[in-house]
Image 1 (cartoon, rainbow, N blue to C red):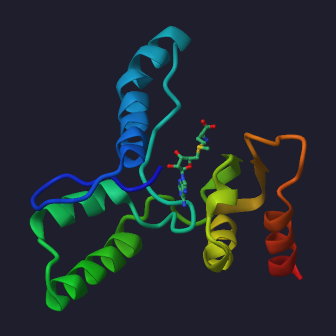
Image 2 (image 1 turned 135 degrees about the horizontal axis):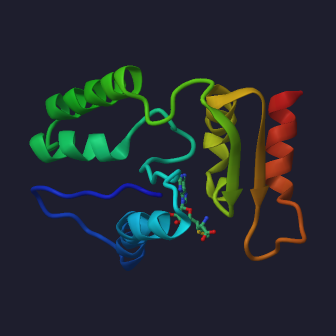
Length: 155
Ligand SMILES: C[S@@+](CC[C@H](N)C(=O)[O-])C[C@H]1O[C@@H](n2cnc3c(N)ncnc32)[C@H](O)[C@@H]1O
């Protein structure tokens, strides 16, 4: 999920941003009812971007609500807060995941962020873990540019 933001100060929010935030809120709201029906709770919804799985955006939201970033000094403070969160309480720790599954998300990451994306996937996967990606609109077609990025990283 993409970042949500609460707290002080005006922010231009697109309809798409609001919808995405709504999706996460909705998923979290209904998780207990789904778990009750299943008889077990094994799903947790966390908020971050896939090319930076160390940064917990819920935790960052708390930092942002306390720091109005309007000048370079506060920007620097925010960057330090991000580094602290990544280091001390990563959203997804190293070697902690068996499978990274993406349904039309990896392909949305910008070309210049792909190296970081694959490095993050590699960081969080356990030994022999797997990553799989599917695209929603043309599920029969492999994501050519993404496959190319992955093969270039591996090469
Ligand atoms: C096409 S939707 C797919 C949603 C979901 N996987 C599904 O199958 O219904 C793409 C989603 O990816 C999210 N997204 C886009 N870029 C992202 C990124 N860099 N990291 C995490 N999520 C991202 C968007 O907010 C959106 O919710």
